[in-house]
Amino acid sequence: MFSAAILTLFPEMFPGPLGLSLAGDALQRGLWSLETRNIRDHGLGRHRAVDDTPAGGGPGMVMRADVLAASLDAAVGPEDPRPRLIMSPRGERLSQARVKQWAAGPGLVVVCPRFEGVDERVIEARSLVEVSIGDYILSGGEIAALALLDACVRLIPGVMGKTESGAEESFESGLLEYPHYTRPREWEGRTIPDVLLNGDHARIAKWRRERAEQLTKARRPDLLKK
Ligand code: SAH
Image (cartoon, rainbow, N blue to C red; front, side):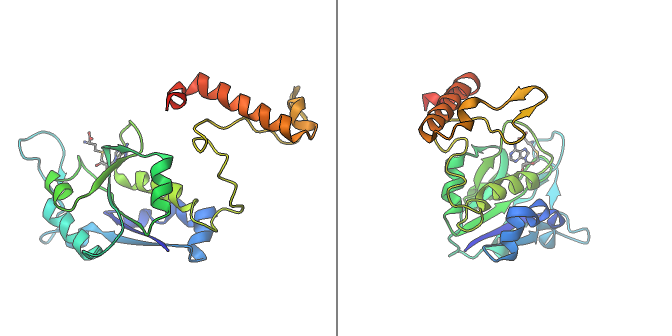
């Protein structure tokens, strides 16, 4: 079973949105599991400090290597087969290919930093894989981890209604998805393309393919080059 361990200063943020809808139902049905660990449990001193000022000066605070390592070592044993990730804008950009790979595995250990980030040495010493969800800055790793887990959980067998509902989505074919329509047939003077209403499945498939290609060419030509 896919089991996620989250290391965070804000365990109350989990399961959060993952406790609802598709992911929440699956969590209740035991199709995946979630464990949160509060990094502050390993904080130092009376105030359970987890951060300190950056060596070399500069703004903000840095999460201490010793504190985070103690939290990690308590959460995962040396034989734990799960990939150990740390959310970071410097990391590898999350892709559907990675999501698929991780969803098929034993689960993930995900560190959610706050402040300016974490002491570099703990990333090296615990072989943490840095993962980014895009080129913008969030205030902490939690929302990034939720996005990552949501993407993985929906791919776990049995989570989505039909196994094939996922096969035609954006990125699966290397193309963005074709446009969707549903009732009413006419809305604010706009109609549904005729081809979708005549029941000719070969023509519909061809139309969808063409629209997907046009959209991808216009919006994401980089995907076509791959
Ligand atoms: N000073 C850092 C940003 C810190 S933001 C820098 O310039 O790179 C605080 C934390 O939020 C980060 O350590 C990371 O865990 C998380 N975070 C922010 N943006 C993110 C993103 N795009 N993807 C993944 N995690 C992110």
